[in-house]
Length: 59
Image (cartoon, rainbow, N blue to C red):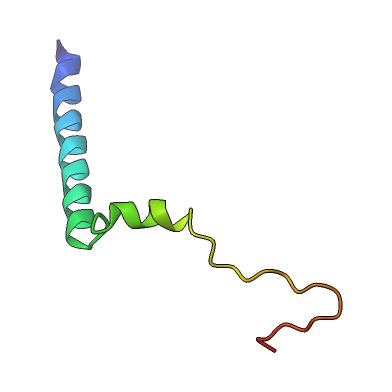
């Protein structure tokens, strides 16, 4: 029974820390575009490698 006197405040404190972390992340814009990162991995924006004898146009 005396263990509950320690465990309940610890659990409430951990829950409060989790809530504060979630609110901070929500206010700082962490959840603004959840689909953007998932779609960016599917889009191939890289240029193809130059073949033999061809120079890269970025040089």
